[in-house]
Length: 263
Image 1 (cartoon, rainbow, N blue to C red):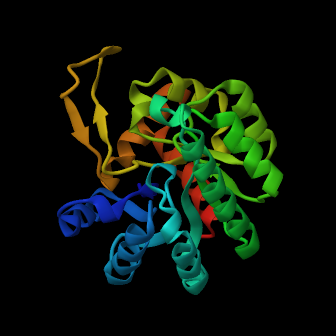
Image 2 (image 1 turned 90 degrees about the vertical axis):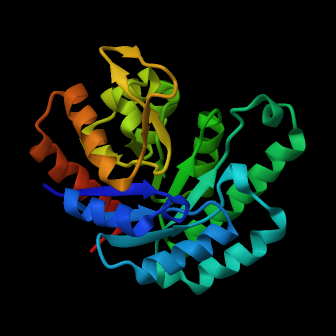
């Protein structure tokens, strides 16, 4: 059985050669590596060119928590230059989760400016967008809709179901991470979304807790995700949806191939 990890930060992973070898051995067919700032865009370009297996696909953009307005023009220029190497613009979006952002209008406006720039660029280049929307689910969706973007994935969606309904009605996708094993908001969203609108991811190298009979373990008990852990996501998905792993993997992989136009 093969799987596609649709969201990993390969530029942030230590011992990357070992991690990619482990992913290949476990059955990871391909990985979409996403970027968070200008430096990570450049590093991910190098990773894509050097990697042999699994197949690496590339998304370039600025994460809302890592925006640097001084680098914005350079990042846009790099994306235009490397368009043929890209399968998506990302990771982009809004994140007002933390109080120090919610109370700072300048920080919020800067995020909106950068998000709008990259959404417009995605539309211009006819590329899908990978959207981060933590704590700003409604506003992020409305900005995507206003721009008129054709293809968009709301990555690791854990927001309200009314916004999720609008996302799905708009023809957009969500993705699920290993948090699906224990996170009520993630489980609720994935339970609601039809299988043909969901993709599997790890968001490596995020640290995840370990579920323990429905109760959380100590905060330091868990694992640092690698792309091979996309199989954890699949397992949690199939248990939640009561479907077989082989049948589910075929549909979920097809979603990823069609969304990103993977070979």
